[in-house]
Length: 284
Image (cartoon, rainbow, N blue to C red; front, side):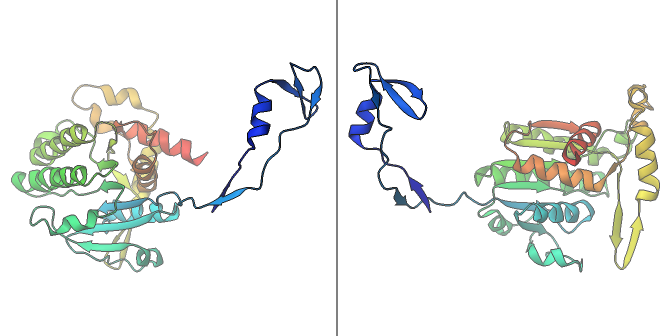
């Protein structure tokens, strides 16, 4: 509920002939005398709808990066849903109960598109390894299908977790990188003003595999501290990409959620240094 102030016609007519305020009163330019302050009639109560709630769909929300994104989005008060081939999460953390889990395959039927109902933004963490043909499908075709469906549904913003170039590794994983770049091209075409591509390198943090927790930060954190200050090495021919610093999964999650919900977040490609910079800004 909100209140709207209604001014009397008599008071408004006086304003047109008055100069600026003086000690809470208005000086009339015609009569050279002090006029009384304008009157405010009883406020009228009107119904004002609440601001629309934001709903985020995380593709691959039960994975390493996706689960951190879901948790970060919940912490920001968003309604969160996830779509994956397995459906529900294997995580037993309390926050997982607050996520709506959808089961679907982006490479098969259109039934999964129901997960897009009411969604305002999407973050895709879909990706994988295997043969070149499989890697192109899972990294490229699956994400392209999601991008097109989201655009057709009127989704406002779409964030894609891609990958940094690693020089020679691009040739060894040809299908992986060709799929990633094809999805990036589609995203920038369908979402020229609301599409954001994050290109992290090695993502570290505590990764849960079954009942085991793998502390990838033991290796990743020291490397990140060293390599983030060695950016010139990243420009060296052939070996330069090998000096791309790792990035913490929490930083990726924070920047991804911000990019998906902040209308002034710049569209386009954000490399690992940009991810670190945006994350540091949010931590201040």
